[in-house]
Image (cartoon, rainbow, N blue to C red; front, side):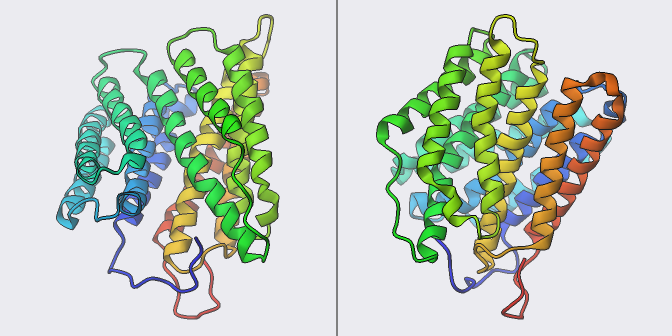
Length: 370
């Protein structure tokens, strides 16, 4: 819900530090190792799936779970320990990417276990699905980091998509309803339960089938169609005048489109490269949604809910441009590495802006925005 005034703030917010570390990891995943500039992507996928998203998810849970659970989720000293350990893992990764990933994944699983203990003690049932998926994702990250199973990267990708699906479907309707009521409109009922269940089950089924290389075309088509119907019933255009809402809607819509593209790609006789739906889901439905939700949380913490920001808009446009160029390269690889390098450049610019956004706090002037 939007807040009129900023809450009393500590010298720093732990979730901001996690988001900042996540942004640095996303930048490193595209800038290093240097082999990716020659077309070798064998290492950057794990950095994004089990690096950026693992730390990003930890930051989200630090902020969201105390409200869901109804009590402080972790002792401050333990939060500081986890953040410090993740910072060490990041620095170690600059020297040796494999060792850094191994340490990061072990820390990530330990953090999820610690969060789960509090949630179980509080009997916070609403937090259990997220924590279960987070635990599975962190555990799969350990398998990938220690190179124990070649399918771990794909499974991790599907798990983190499922996590973003769960989080997005919970956060997005609340954001839109807050904007609608702020504008004087009445609250809108949530989509019908059957359509919510249909898109949820079909989306998770698609990801499960895809992870284990089983036929997924029909499930993906159902997930995309039901997801678009669900999104239309939310009516996000009622809040488009507020900062960040258009970009969050773009990310939510892109995920549904990604499922439809996945269905088209898997259909017999299709010539669409798998890289097209993969990157629509990864860049728009995953990374962009994570950034949209995180910046919304930062705005709210600063007492600047829904306020527009030039830096925020530039960040969002850079990520959208990265998606457009990366999909163009997947469709037209004959045009050379220019499209790919352009996508990488926009990605780096977008996450540099994101790193600044999550650390910026409300200025003393009341009319200043993020």
